[in-house]
Length: 481
Image 1 (cartoon, rainbow, N blue to C red):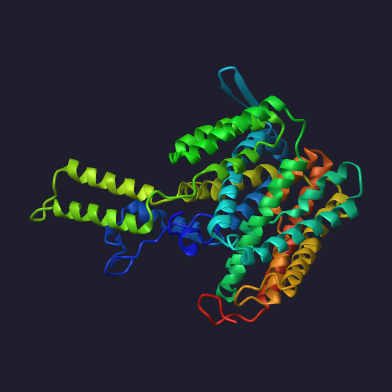
Image 2: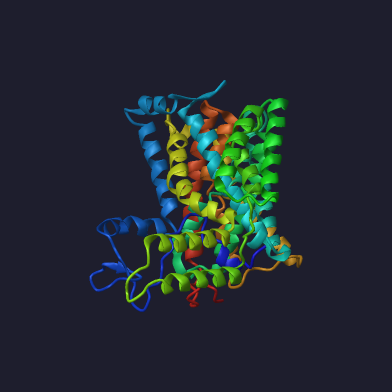
């Protein structure tokens, strides 16, 4: 593996953050705000600047997700509710030779687009295991054990309340944590939150996502088709072979990934699992280490500069050849795993997940709310997320630290861990996803959705208040005691 540094190779947050280039010998903007790093700024750049600022905010994807959920709830309970429901039931058919896929728009979002979301989740899991917080056994122990505790206790609470029968299928719903919302709350709190707590929450959510993927694959799978499973296995072997042979082109993995998705879709295993399997096969190594890249890039730039005589550029062909060579060197110095993750993150954060929320978060509230709040599924989801996450995460973290297998991150106190345990109750995206798998449709799904929305609001506000009452840190990085 090339010489990655843990902080240098991984994004600070799970959503995309635009790279801000430091200016050369001056401020970021000139006096008229017309250039950045010496490069003239086009009018369109100044028009789009507010949107880019929003996209770079730590809380942006969480806010967009919240807005999508509110819109879905409002429309589901408006005079246009029937049209809103009919929109997601619209059939969309894709054909490829003798193969034909005809599903509702809702299914294309949940089974198709969400496979891309799970691909990003898989890439994040792989990155954390290789070079992140899960790369060291001692560092990984705390978030892994805390996540397991935060998954088991909510599931037990749900089963204890919901009982047997069809309702018991929802036991996986309160196991999940929505990282976009949770980290968005930490972003609102700003520098008063230690950096170590942000890292702990991100690592905990990664493990939480892995557990959710395993639960979906093992317990929310319909009747299996052995021929389709065999085809998926062959395609997966082809992907592994491409990795071993050093194939790095995203197009190859994209085409094989689509074939894998189609096979998994036909197999009975939920199609989104294909996204995670694909992620694990994408290369994590670079062809050029940092020293070799710097040496090669410097030689190309020196040659580029040397071809400029008396202030006049050399031929366009020569300059283009140098730029293509520099681009090739930059591509070889990047791990495909990281470049693909970076390319997909804005699409998942600002399009796919909000679209999923629009299609799934809306539920028509029929009858009196008092009838809903006594429903076992609603109570199981609500208490599982709000109470179960608090108890599970806090007790598991306390036990593993007291037993000496792990230690708290620098600057993090037990009150911080308790606040994060509250934020773990923000289930939303993954919880809604599992709810759809568990109940398919009908009143039980509606009760689960209302429980998820209520729990996410309560947990978000509760976590904010707990963390807000902890004295602020004076260290500008948020690492002080």
